[in-house]
Length: 207
Image (cartoon, rainbow, N blue to C red; front, top):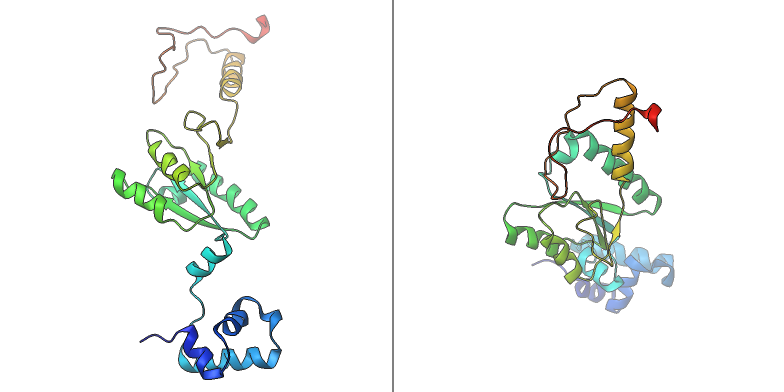
């Protein structure tokens, strides 16, 4: 049977709260008493308070969930995903916060469970497409989220991204400036208001 906090308290002859303070609030104890408690814990094989339970008591975990709608390996192989994670990681470091990568299974129930069981204080959502139901799962938990997909963001959600129209305009101007006039535009979705047929690239000198 695993030793408990009460076992340590009994061995030292102190209260449970005193043993707890030895781990979470050492400034409340003398150095000698804390050393005695920790020595008894080592002898008994007590590993210390459960980190999950301690997080629940504190009301925060100290970790951000990074929700991936692709396989986990994609986070380490796709150049954009790697740079995205590096940026999120740099900010997390400045705030002494950890990151928890949460890949979403294709099964809807398992994906919901992955969100429900993640021990995090909030979510950073990477490229949600048709999986908007996972955002509902986050909102149901009452956790904050920030997403990279403007179409998925709700009125109370934060969205971080680029000005897609300005970026496309800049690319077109660059291509036209090189003298190209017959250009193919490839996309993974068809917008309902997108024009069909050939598109004319205006000469930037005409602007």
